[in-house]
Picture 1: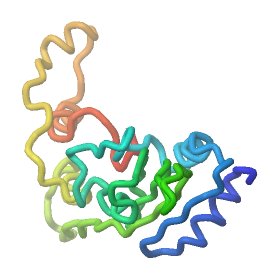
Picture 2: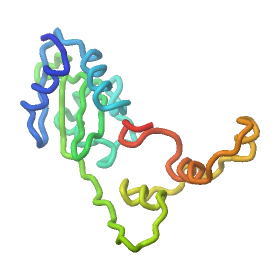
Picture 3: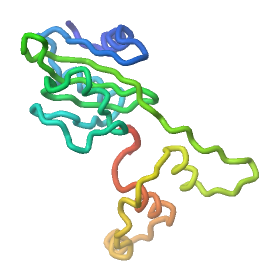
Amino acid sequence: MELTQATVNDLLAQLGPGDGYMYLPSDLDPQALTDLLDGRYGAARTLVLDGFTDPTVDESRGAALHVPFEDRAVKIRAWAYGDQWVGTGTARDAECTERPVLVVAHRRVPEPLTVAPDEDVDWMERLRRITGWIQPAQRPDVDWAEVESRLGSALPSDYKRMVETFGEGAFDGYLD
């Protein structure tokens, strides 16, 4: 099977919009598929590596992709994309043969809180509402004076609030 973005489109279309998975031909390079999906969706999250599931995996972090394989998943990488999880990697089939897999699952996306036209809400609060962020501050302990001293420049206060709130990283593994 030649892997192209068109091939990936066809495979995802076969799985449909709901939950589904498929074992792919054994000669398919799972890393090549991961690379294509990285190009499409951004940085992936590793759910399973060498048969061990990341202990932080839960409903909000792609656990639904692991369900079809139970304890047979060997390596699963995942992307959050809109209201869907997309995953690929390898899993053992019914004969215990390790094969490449592609899996999709529904992803619950919190409804963003609406802002009335006359409501004065700053952009950080809007971002928190859009993302449904309810976690505590991720980097409240940043020594901004030291950071700015090393940079030789002051940083915008809204940037500092964003880093303190969300930490470093990416939104949906896509926007860094």
